[in-house]
Amino acid sequence: MAPLARTVLEALQEAPGGVCLRYPHGRRRFASLGNAEAAALSLATAAALARAGVRPGYRVAVLTRDPVELGTCVLTLAGMGAVPVLVDGSLPLRVMGRCLAAAAPDVLLAEPLAHLAGRLLGWGGGTVHRRVVAGPGWWPGRTLRRLRRSVPPWRTLAGPPDDAPAMVVFTSGATGPPKGVVHRHSTVQAQIRALPEGVALAGGTVVAAFVPAAVLGPLLGATTVVPRVDLARPTRMRARDLAHAVNSTEADVLLGSPALLDRLARYCIRTLTPLPSLRQVASFGASLPYAVLDRLRVCLPAGATVCSVYGATEALPVSMIDHRELLPLRAATARGEGVCLGRPVPGVTVRVLPLDPLSSGVDVPRGTVGELAVSGPNVSPAYLDPAATLAAKLYEADGGVVHRMGDVGRLDEQGRIWLYGRVAHRLRTAEGALFTEQVEPALDAVPGVRRTALVGVGPAAAQWPVVVVELERAASRGDRAVVRRGIREVLNGLELPVTGAVPVLFHRSLPVDHRHAAKIDRARLAGWAVSRLGRSFRRGGR
Image (cartoon, rainbow, N blue to C red; front, side):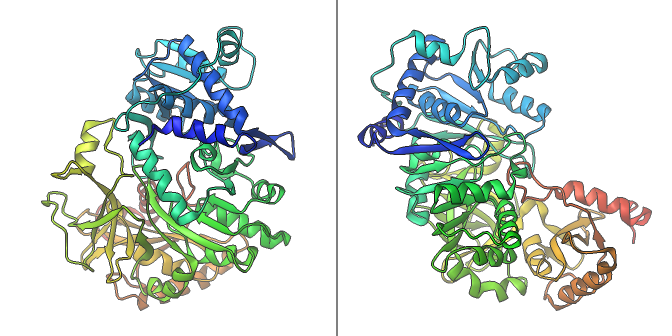
């Protein structure tokens, strides 16, 4: 297999008239980065970084908001045999510091502000021995732009072997501290091959409403459009900016999290703004709620499809399902049977392991609920932290890697995956185990409800369920009684260890993750629920 970077570079050079990236320029316009320009910029960047002291095997933390610099640096570093390290700019500064300390980078390639923060906060500890300024802004010292002008560009990117590390990408930290995921070159190539089979990105114009999106165009042979977004607060992207990015570029594919897609759909319905060019929408980051799917389809052309993609930073994609198969399964989800995630993509094997963490790894019978585990060429081999690797990875006799997803689910007779929620969010009630995705999708359908969260309070071995509700913004305090009755009726209709007698609390805005605004911080919410319920719950009584 040809090295990843060389394959991308050759693809850019073979279609010099194409456009690989479009990004905001001015208030309403989009600038373009052509394939020929991107190829030349990558070769110039390789020479500049080599002059700055970057060597094969070095870990390079890349912290820049400039989409052109971000995409160019990540692909070029991988092509040089260095290992780019990507950390969400939306994370709190102290958490970013911990991520960089764990990554132990040799080089900090960042904007001036990030360099200043790194100096003040000690990012990278004592491992950083090269500092290069990238991105916009003036800087008196050595910058990537000046280095590009001072040395002749490389002629090609040879690329390291397939089994060499390609990049380190940190998880969002939505269900625990962010972990550094190590991807090999072969892993990234497998992810690229798997995506177009289900989402058909090659040759299209793709609006990617997540960060970082700038590397997608060259990798997928598509024109990637990066909407206007503050990378420090990506979940606050304005719906009108996203709609403008789609319509002004006549994009045919949109990628985004359910929360951003919901914001877009609500805006389009409110302002009567259609999205006529879209032929496909792919949802990433969390399961796609039926209410969001319904709103999206109102805004799209009749022939457009909406696809829900399941995966993780450690393994993407795992499975896909489009709305034509998803809609007939709404009743099963409403009965508490979980959310269908579709069938595994080609090349990926999904297993269901016992929920007991000390189990031997033998699969449970089909239809039985357990922890989802996946294997395939697009599964990352390890984390930076050996302890995290030991907890989440199983190694097969042929050298393959099985990744424990941390999700609860089952496989039906048709080989489809049904999600029940996170293992860490399982409630151990006196009546039996209870999972979030059995309950919340049914409650989310109650009129007036924006979203719900099922949390457990009390002793760990005998928790009491509590339902926390975020109302639609138009709802008034007087609507709470109606919503509470509706929720209790739904709970009484579920054949699960939960009844309408559970407490129902109302929260102004459920706390969610920084990356997708879709994963609820249940530990924080459970603490809030206990404070609202009173002393009896804090003492373990009712």
